[in-house]
Length: 78
Image 1 (cartoon, helix red, strand yellow):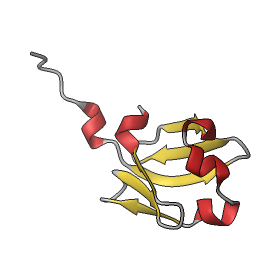
Image 2 (tube, rainbow, N blue to C red):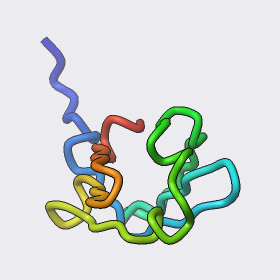
Image 3 (spheres, rainbow, N blue to C red):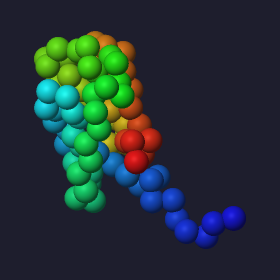
Image 4 (cartoon, one colour):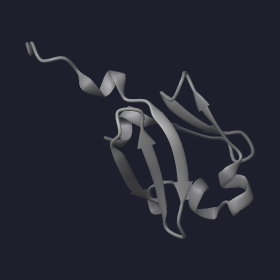
């Protein structure tokens, strides 16, 4: 049993943006992460307008894209 706190439980997104091949997320604690769109086929196939139509869930715990039916947990990216 670990006595260390699970820091991934408190990971919250505050801002998202895209490049041609990457999704970038600014976390509320100041860290920035980038993940390849190849990991998410629906995001990779989406238009830039669709990508920008996102909603942060649970104060930044997750990200939702209604038009492409995609949800991502921010903690799972770590």
